[in-house]
Amino acid sequence: MKKYRVRFEIDEVVEAEDSREATNEAIGKTIGGCWFDNELTNHIRWNADVEEVEEEEEVEG
Image 1 (tube, rainbow, N blue to C red):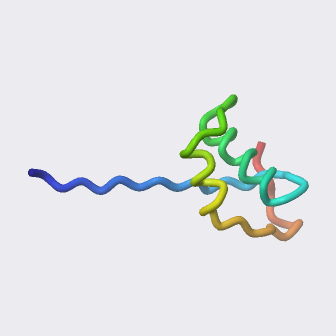
Image 2 (image 1 turned 120 degrees about the vertical axis):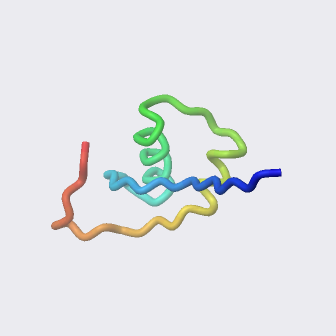
């Protein structure tokens, strides 16, 4: 049997009112549009590291 490494990461800067909305925006930006609440998006929402960005950092998009 072969070994494989699978990585999953979202690294997006988005504008949002709170960390939950920021996570939603980052998921949408990563996949390029509409997405559904499911086990994967809930996993991302509950396990993502979300931090506020200083104003001088540029927000893409």
